[in-house]
Image (cartoon, rainbow, N blue to C red; front, side, top):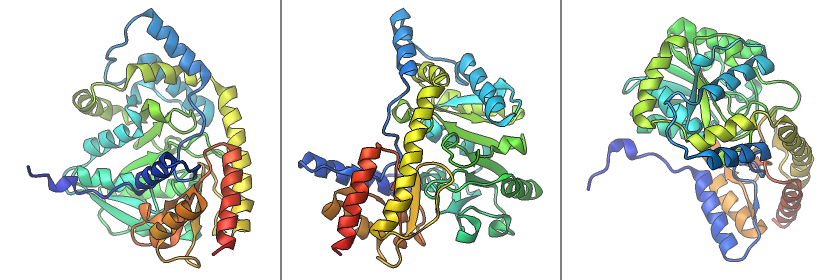
Amino acid sequence: MRVSTRSAVDPFIVMDVMQAAAAAEAAGRHIIHMEVGQPGTGAPKGAVEALNTAMAQGPLGYTVALGLPALRARIAQMYGEWYNVDLDPGRVVITPGSSGGFILAFTALFDTGDKVGIGAPGYPSYRQILKALALEPVDLPTQSANRYQPVAADFAGMDLAGLLVASPANPTGTMLDHAAMGDLVGACAETGASFISDEIYHGIEYEKKAVTALELTDDCYIINSFSKYFSMTGWRVGWMVVPEDHVRVVERIAQNMFICAPHASQIAALAAMECEDELQTNMDVYRQNRALMLTGLKDAGFTSFAPPDGAFYVYADVSDLTSDSRAFAAEILEQAGVAVTPGLDFDPQRGLTTLRFSYARSTNDIQEGLARLKVFMNGR
């Protein structure tokens, strides 16, 4: 049976690393996971309790495609609390994870063959989802001088239909300030390009608050998720904020593609938003882990990286150590028992000389991983 040309997407390399790590664990080895951007904690206790209560009261079924009204309203309230933005809950769309949000956004905004700019290094699935939808991803090689974030000069004259930015970014953890975000919003407005802001790491910041594009414009799409700050990766629930006149467009697509986000996950997500004490305890772990990484990686011999502003990653230049990050990551897994992600996942052109280290797991795991990396590097 034939397959479509649209299906010829590249593998998500970090998932391959996870599979190799799982195979090593199945063989009896203890692996430290620094490859995957998944919190080591589960959903907040209040979220689980709320779901248990709801399930005891009766069966859960479909919700409306836009999501539970109470959850949409609570998300809108959060924008006032976090950013002093007055957001109409009617513009909030609940999605099956941020991945569902990207599919909805790309389908609503772009036609077959449209070019969409994405910063490199960047989250690899942007590129692959765009390809699968018969769109053309355009990598914008970002520079260290710009904190690996795109600037308007990177896409001048490219005739892009859209620009997707992430702040805090994966894999670098860097953020756009008001001025930098404003420059990108303005450049897109001048050329008629749609502006999409991936904000799934908001809430995980260290020295300053991340900027939402909604502080600068209503003419944008926001993608967010309960996976990271709210520690609910496996629940597959996220949200979008779209312009008022796009709500019905997105709703029609969501009705047909997904029907709705999981009802159970929406109930848990609503309760999770009231678990601030527990969420801030998680943040204390990330802050401690970040401090350990900044000193421990350098002590192990990984010396070229910028401290992350947010998220829970360090993106290191390892050009002095290897010209094949995929082989190097495999060597580290085999010899040190530490799973890390080759930069090739995030930057097809320059990623052969970079690695991403995640510090989302427990502090004990981070300490052990750094110790193993030091022994490994001293033995090379």
